[in-house]
Every structure is written in C-alpha cells, then in structure tokens.
Amino acid sequence: MKYIIIALSIILIMIAPFFGQIPLSLETLLNSNSMQHQIFFEIRLPRLLLAFFVGGVLALSGLIFQTIFKNPMSTPFTLGVASGATLFTAIGIVLGYTAYLSLFAFLGALMTIFLLFVIASRLQSSQTSSLLLVGIALSFFYSASLMVLFYISNLEQSYEIVMFTMGSLDIVGFENIYLIMIASAVLLFLSYFYQYEIKLLLTSNQLAHLKGINVKRVNYILLIGVSIAVGVAVSLTGPIGFVGLVIPHIIKFVTQKSADKILYSTFFYGGVFLVASDLIARNLSTASDVPIGVVTSFVGAPFFIYLIIKRR
Image (cartoon, rainbow, N blue to C red; front, side, top):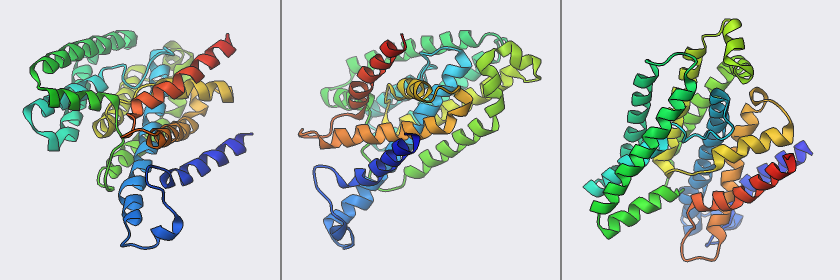
C-alpha cells in the first residue's frame, strides 16, 4: 500500500502541469516556438516546483513546531512570522512598491525572527511555551496594524492586500524557485542533523537535558531555521494555511510512527498535497484561479475532521 501511494503521488506530480485552462500535449511541447511550450516551461513547471517545495516546507515546519512546543495545534505561522511578512507586504502595497513585495515580505519575516530571538535570549530553556505566547501576541499586533493599513488604503490597494493574504502560486520563470529550493535544502539538512535531538524532545525536555542535549540551543536553532524557511515561502506565495497543521497529523496517523521517523515523508506529502490543491484550483470552471489558501482549507479540513473522529 505504501508503494502504491508513492507511485500515485509521483504520477500526480508528473501529470499536474498538463492540466489547466489551456490543455497541453507532448507534441506541442517539442516546438520551442509554440505558445504551449512557453506556458509549460515558463508558467506550469515553475508553478509545480513552487507548490511542491512550499508545501514541503510548510508541512515539515509544522511537524517541527509541534515537536518543540509539545502542542499538536502549532503551525508554521505560530510565532507570527507569516503575520509579519503579510504586514510588511501590505506596507509595500500602500507605499506603492509593488515590484518589491517579495522583498518586503521577507524583511517582515526577518524582523519578526529578530524580535523573537531578542525575547528568547531573556527566557529560560523551560519557557518555550512563553515564546509561543509571544508569537501569538505579535500576530495580534500585526493583525491590528494590518487593519489600520486597510483603513488608510484605497480600494485597489485593499484588494491586493486581500489577495496576498489568501495565498497565490502565480509565478513566471525559475528566478524565485531557487530561493525556495535553498530554503528547503537548509530545512531538510537541519532535520537530518538534529534528528536524534528531535527524537529526545518528543519525550520531554528533561530527558533530552539528561542525555547531554543543550535543549535551549537546539530549540532556538530549529526555530530560527524553520522561521527563515517559512519566511521565504510566505514571501513568494503569501500565507497558505492548514498545510503545516493537517499534513503532519495525517502522516502520523497513517504511518503510526513518531515525528523523528516521518520527517522526509512529511516534506514529500506536504508538497504533493499542495500540488494536488493547486491542480484543483487551476481546473475549476471559474474566471480566474481560486486562491490556493481557500482550496487547501476546503480540501484539508473535512479530511482532518474525519481523522479526528476516527481516532476518537
């Protein structure tokens, strides 16, 4: 069954670029001067890669956050990184710097990470939950600031801000793909390098400390690494909710394994889930693509509720 699911996932990834409002075929792709060739290599393929790597980053980040905070409801956006990126993007829109929105979003994420690092340096190793509360407080502050920007912005600017908050995978070319690939590689490396520490943290911080692990240092390295990766993802696509919450729980339920043994499968199926969601968004009979964040919630929420009921 495991290999069947993997095979179906790979097939889904391979056929996804061929479906959309404009149908494509292998014959037309061979002609480099055709419109279908440009659509495939400049739009569909970069969008597929963006969806896969962003989905993988969000899913794996959610798993690591749930491990560190010992909270099954933690998501990649728990510490306010996505809220900071959204706020700075809105600032860029209101100021008229629409060509640099990705840069504004990343700066917002970095500023949030810096604030969290300064605050974390004043906390004890056992106060990870306090850092979680700080992140929630920052999210509320950013949300209030965003409401102020809505109030002072015009109708067009408000529309751009709303569309960003819904998430989008619209991309042309491979320029930004390399950024998310590097962020994914760094996150996977951290997961591999600290796999043993993650296993101990699953039990308790006290056990990890008794085993000679510097719990505070490991936690903050993972949190900073995850937050930077999430910041890169949000700067490219906007906040895409639910992936980091539902995918780790689904993988745990299906495999019946602990978090340290499903790190790579969580990344892979997070990417597959977002690719599938994007495939749905692009093939609905609507005037334009449905925002990807809407699709992930509609698709993931019912299935997640079903798993919760089944687990009792």
